[in-house]
Image 1 (cartoon, rainbow, N blue to C red):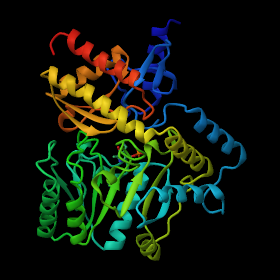
Image 2: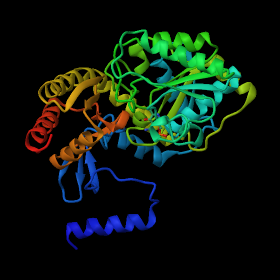
Image 3: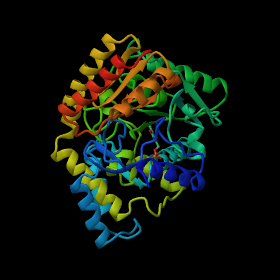
Image 4: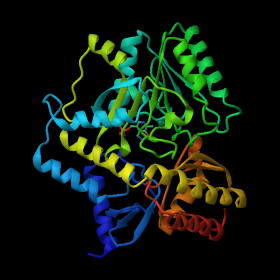
Length: 414
Ligand code: PMP
């Protein structure tokens, strides 16, 4: 069978057995077989620069992390109802990266589970139900969280209030004003606030990072109304912004909850919710929590090894430095091509605004043909999302920028 026949046969088999609710990326779907560092290889042996997946934060199949997973899988893999070293060590390591007020960890398997639990705890301990999210937010797959993820196009859930976050913030106080307005609407509707839930890099809103500090007034507003602040760190967490481990640090705030997932195990499923001791104790007076696979020994080993690599390889510094280099290169493209209208983001999470969703889609597919993988997000899917592994080098960034420049120059009709 030729490579093309093989590809077609696999597509047909996939269509027969996997739910049509799954969608493949790209006009010409990519059949991937292996990956290493920032590169992902297709069935024909061609390599692509992966500047889309923010899960393999240390690079795909990092040997140190793979080794840690394999070794732990051969020794012990069980759950948190036994006393064992790994979950305790992981909780200690996570808390050491957090403000001192954060003192309690719950381990889960996905960002969705962590956010779902954060909402449940907020509603339990505040006695309120109202939740504020942004109008292009994505927070997870559960029924509850789909109602808090307007980017899906589904109706928002009961007692969910949205705010339209501007792509370019006027000043550091603008976001707080929007949150206060949502709190007023909540009051008018007779709903008691429970939480403000935001992704601290606003990834699905199109990577809104400036001015740093704009969350501060918003956190004060939700606290003033008796609600809690949930920092969704699934996208920015583990160093992506280049300004510390967590996105909320850029805004100089201490959240009541930090939820995290995706990059936490560099590809192995492991996620978490971190909160204050006080909130954890208040919740435990009402309810218990157990999650069979959340905090299993192998997932903890994966997360610990990922944290080791982030530290030893200086990945946060690289996110800052190579992220600045990437930002400068993208800005020069924005300056030269009219269809690119702005650059946002921080570190190695960049959003390039284009004039339309159609143009963004064409660029994403053009870059895929040129050997670079990126995605799109934001209102009308008109922003390009660039999120390479934090191990990316300047040479690899140059390949990304040159490919981007070439497709804009060569493809007619841009
Ligand atoms: N929050 C944000 C900001 C996300 O981007 C995602 C996943 N795209 C989630 C939560 C949900 O995480 P998971 O897919 O691991 O459940």
